[in-house]
Length: 155
Image (cartoon, rainbow, N blue to C red; front, side, top):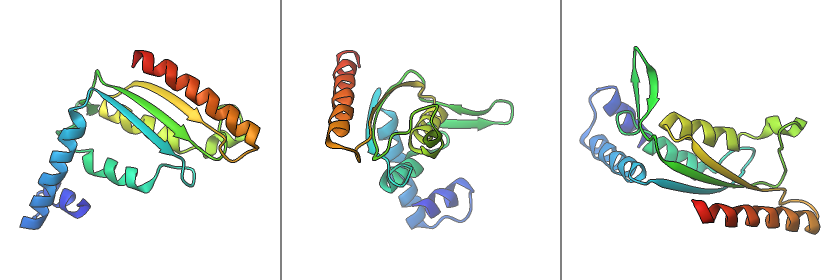
C-alpha cells in the first residue's frame, strides 16, 4: 500500500495493482474524512501508539483528501470543524512537569497528526497508571470513567 501511495503521488509508472491499491487508500481516507467526530481509544505501546493505528494513519493521510501543501501557505489541514476524543491508557503515568513526561510519544503524536489534518478540537482522557498497586489502578480507572461520563454528555 505504501509503495502504491508513493508511486501514484510521485507520478512514476504505477502498476495497475498499485493504482488499485491507491484507490483503496482513497476510499479509506474519504470514509475517515466523512466523520464529524472521532473517538480513539488507544494504549501506549513502547512509549508510542499501536502499530496498526500507525499503519491506518499512514494510509488515510492523503494530500488533496485531508491536507494540502502550497508554496505560499505550506501545509494546511482540510478537516476543520471536527472533534476528536482521545482515550489513552498506559502502564506508567507521564504527567507534565515530571521527568517521565518526555517519554510520552503517544499523546504528542496524536495531537500533531490530528492538528496536521485540521482537527484541533480535542478532548483527552488518560487511564494511567495501569501497572501499579490495585488501589492506584482502581483510582486511575475511576478518574478516567468519570471524565468519560462528563465527556459523553457534551460530545
